[in-house]
Image 1: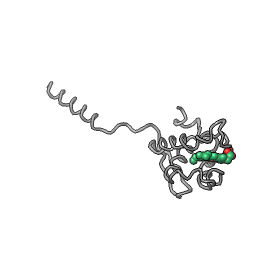
Image 2 (image 1 turned 45 degrees about the vertical axis):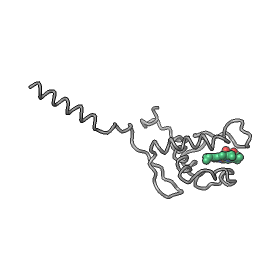
Image 3 (image 1 turned 30 degrees about the vertical axis):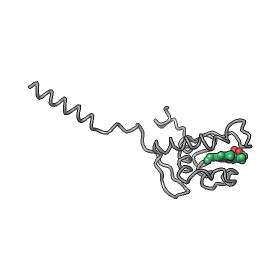
Image 4 (image 1 turned 90 degrees about the vertical axis):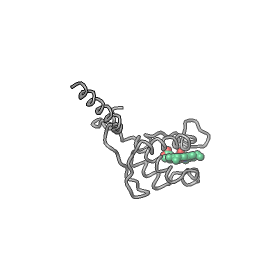
Length: 132
Ligand code: HEC
């Protein structure tokens, strides 16, 4: 009898150990990317990489009191659609004058993903994602 309990507990522990880690709460969010005409899942790896590129590139100019003549920008300076337009139309001055040239297409997509995920209109009181 005792052996059986030990065996069950051991299999239980093994099962927990082998099972994949719990998925983060909430549903996967997608962004339709007008540049590639495809849907992109806003997964953590891309958002994190986009955040880092945004800080290192865009924010090197678009910070308060910069000497590049660039306006102060934050994630919520545009709506989701607004950020998509910035990266699709590429009509802002820095996109035209070559300031984005050091960034690969994939890096720009990740920055777009990141900014989209934090855009002005992403806050939604009826959605668990807005809780923190
Ligand atoms: C070398 C400096 C520089 C870099 C790097 C840079 N920008 Fe700019 N950006 C400018 C300047 C200068 C302007 C034109 C002045 C203005 O309106 O801010 C501009 C304009 C803009 C505008 C329009 C401004 C507004 O207030 O609506 C957006 C949006 C923008 N940039 C986004 C970005 C993004 C996103 C990145 C990173 C991928 C980036 N910029 C990287 C210098 C830069």
